[in-house]
Picture (tube, rainbow, N blue to C red):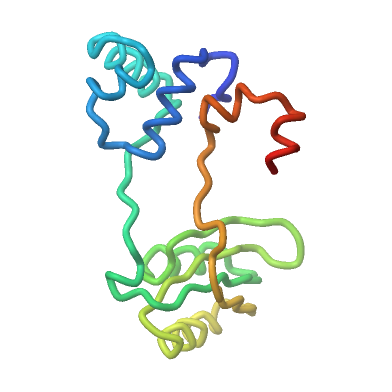
Length: 164
């Protein structure tokens, strides 16, 4: 993804701010929010997509409402990365997999329907190496947007310090 800044102007940042929280917003409404006509905002969104600034649009699901009641992070150390990655790609419990530095090779985000299923997943991992499971108790900051609101960005550092 290109760095947002030099290739993106203030209007593009406003467009990105609204799209990151409301991907299904109409181009007419988006144009109204950023002060452009519907054709002009549609063209800007198309250019942001072509430049790769907007990679894709997604839907955020409620894990609990689809039966995923247990979330954990798993630190994993393996000597057979390819076999472990094949296992991760075919395991529906694995939501994210990151290659990391340090004592462990990988950090996984796991979601299962129960603690028992989480334990069973850990047992299936044993043949690939060693791991530590960190169970998520709550998520006070579940998701943050990359692009701050235009109001936040316009505030001076001193103003942000006072409000934060």
